[in-house]
Image 1 (tube, rainbow over the protein chains, first blue to last red):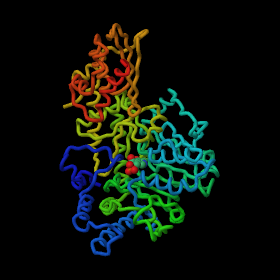
Image 2: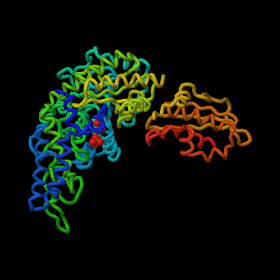
Image 3: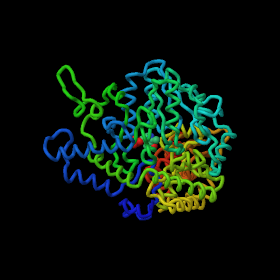
Image 4: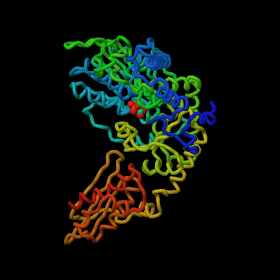
Length: 453
Length: 118
Ligand SMILES: Cc1ncc(COP(=O)(O)O)c(C=O)c1O
């Protein structure tokens, strides 16, 4: 993959030739084909979908439905009708929490999530539990950023909502520093059939397991397939929802292979337009669920005294959607497919390795990278603490060099609390990033040192 | 123009009025949970004037420098006058241009000051 020549597909570099964009975890840049497709809709067939019998409306509907089909193929959905088009990952998760969560959660039930979640896969479940008197359980992470499930490292691998956060000991801090060493291979491997950790967490009362495929801070790639298998062997009725916002843009994702029940992601993180997200769900579950929003497009028949809803997916797609966004998302997928997801992943893995090496050789112990110390278990995401410099100052000084990184808690406050910090700096990679970008990041961080002393 | 001007860096590296006061007349603190910045102010007032003021801060260079510069400014001034200090004053005092994200950092010490003199 040639990221340098690939940059010419992204018009933003025409306006900012020296831009070093290292925040694709927040949102990705857009290739010309996607931007052109948005204009194409508005210029050539900007009619509403599912409504007109006239030609341009039919064209819009066809283009719209084609995206659903391509999306379904992209994640290997069994049926196209299992793809629901939403506004975002956030809306997709909330849809499940409302339409299914409020249907099946009762007092005494359990909802399990992890401390590495983005707020959008944390707060909806926490609130659902609070509203209904269910128990909210949070799976901890180890100091090197793996889900604390299988190694008997901590005596209590889970935290309950009423529980207190553990204070970080100096010993833990030291081990965290040690996790920087990229030469250390992962000490963590799931024993094939060992469910001894998970069976303390998942019980017959657990109705939902909500879990990220890839952490947007630690970069940890969770072994979803194994976790689903183990969790469901404990409780076959368990519903597993996977937040794949950081997975679908970067890895090959196969929902049938994973064995989960729902999977969510956002268009804008995978080269597509903002305002569009997707929810994949098992058709049987989707049929049982309550509608999410009521209104136009989602109904079959409406009478004064009752309404008949459409079957999925349209049952969950009330109102006029972001038609241009949905249509253009298709171009993003076509673009990714042309490169090949295996290549996308190996490119990011290579950049990650370079970044590990160069950051460590330049700054040694001064830089503390959160998350797995090896590239195999980590997506192209590097969140770090840099000396005693405040993340805001680091990001601001990098910005003076046109390097875009994120500073803050990255919508993962519980995770930062877990590591005893308020904020971190995050650099993340995607297809258009190059080794030169990694170099510039290192040079930028040297400027931070020079400036702040 | 970089916001990390000489004067800002000077105050960040060698803050004025840093520390605590034994038996202060008043103490105040402000916490911004979003970025984890924290400012604590302590002062001794005499006849409505700031006789002594000290701060402790955890946070970015801007908030720390801002606390140092602001405490310098308020020393010896009358409490009533300090109530008038606002955002525009702070921007002028620091002499740098701040975007909407960083202005909050610069204003944190002022917020703590307003709490201190109410
Ligand atoms: C892991 C993860 N989940 C969920 C989200 C929320 O995505 P969106 O803002 O598109 O709803 C993000 C985006 O930052 C994310 O990284």
